[in-house]
Image (cartoon, rainbow, N blue to C red; front, side, top):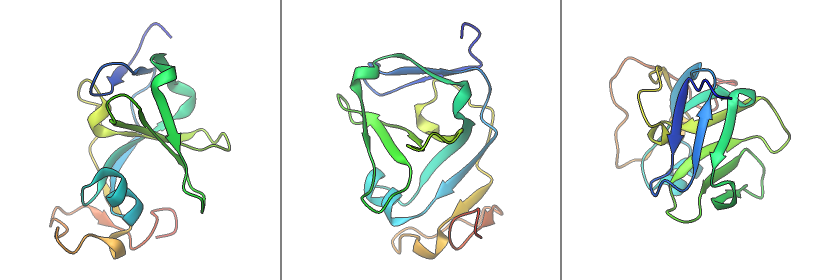
Length: 140
């Protein structure tokens, strides 16, 4: 992959990645796992085709964690703690990259809010006109 469409990195710069195609969609997740993991009311993430993703530096710094109940593996830099991406340990071509991990504009804007039934009580959902899903977007 020499013609990266977009690049990204962690806070310390130890982990770097590139995509050969821009993300296809993005949204906010308000599930309690994302709240606990990020320390915020939601996680802004872009969906990408995992086949277009490549770690170009710092693979040894990437630490993954998967909830005992399942779900995607959450990956972060074990040096600086920056949240980077989520991937399916079963090998699905879908993955999500944290919007803040991109080095530049990823070319996509959030289009929905998922798991709004679990939204943090201390952070009201914005009246931004985006679609809202009580649970996972796939299930509605």
